[in-house]
Image 1 (cartoon, helix red, strand yellow):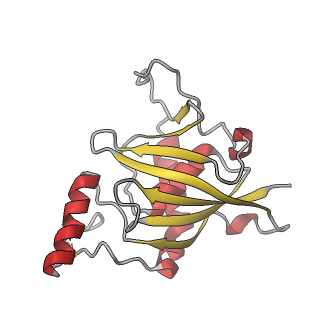
Image 2 (image 1 turned 60 degrees about the vertical axis):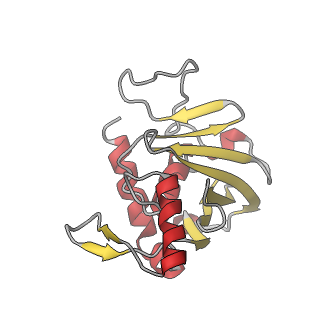
Length: 197
């Protein structure tokens, strides 16, 4: 029987203002955990990512793009249960190697999944902060947050789905809204990465 893993995912450098609690099944792939994190932090998933645990790197490698000395393990073919995770274990995730987004992923709990509940997951149970802004760095986002707190003026950021700019408040997190589109966004991100593998 599958278990439900509850992870606390913190955006490094901004841990106190941007985090999510995500539940996902143990039979999900390591890649799906990555997709869920990207979806939860409003990423467009237009860059590479990897997840590391106990010195092993899980990364979708396109053709001969593996430049690291250690070969990557395929996260699509690796189930989370294969990692033998225990509460308190920490993984890390890097996204957009040029910008340097990093996430700390801590396993908070492992519970047995109720029969027939598999379609409920992945699911965001709590969080804080809006998410990342693509093609910026964590340092730039920290500056935006600091300036917003000091001046009270919200920056205008280009919407990723339209050409217009909208006010962007880093403090704006709506759990219900996040989950309305969450599974669809995870699916879209999976398609983007796996159809071009």
